[in-house]
Length: 339
Image (cartoon, rainbow, N blue to C red):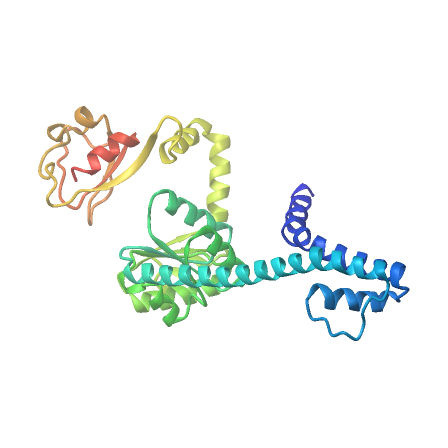
């Protein structure tokens, strides 16, 4: 209820207050002519309108001294205001249109230059959270959405967006699917997610595709067959998390602290080891990961091998390894610069 009141107050300030003086003139003018000239309210409204708009057909005119003085006052007070109001409307329309056009073209140019970005299909509650986290982590992304109201919301947020059907080849190509790093299909329908996944996989066989599932039995299998790299059911994840909060609350608190940058700056991150990294071929102790950076290596993901959890100090670091590390943000950033 409070939000509705605030929304109505904002709309009144934006639209009604600027035209309040005009409404006053259109009421006070006819009443003045009715009182001073004996005109009907309609004739007074007509004379007021042609006076403040400077049309002045001449078929009606005040004849008494009082009516003429009233008309002079109406001209000075009304004509200037009406001209100002028209200029503001014109300026808003022209500037708003030009601003939107320039912003759209700038966004389109930015999309053509994007590399290793993410394509987010659907900007519902899940899509909004994904985009927010991607923005926080400085990841480039494009949102595909068909709802006009949602497109306006994306414009206000300044997100790169395309209006259209995410299962359409041309839309995905315009979003840069050929050079994208990943695609997230998070629309509410399993069938739609399957169509999007099939289309995306056909356009880019190497693309990482993360698909949302409703949790209905068999839906995840269909998405995997369509080409999804990973399938996530928000309902299952939510249920598991709620259960773990009951059973292992301290573990959940630790994971929250490790995966979200809080006041302490502690976070869990993944770092990819390049071939040029100085630590390639060295053990963890030789590379000085803990000593130099104060970082704990929680696990190592190596191609075509099971995840190495809690690796020992004698574990060698190889090119292409993905290090799952835990530490302060500044320390992780310092280590990332050496990889």
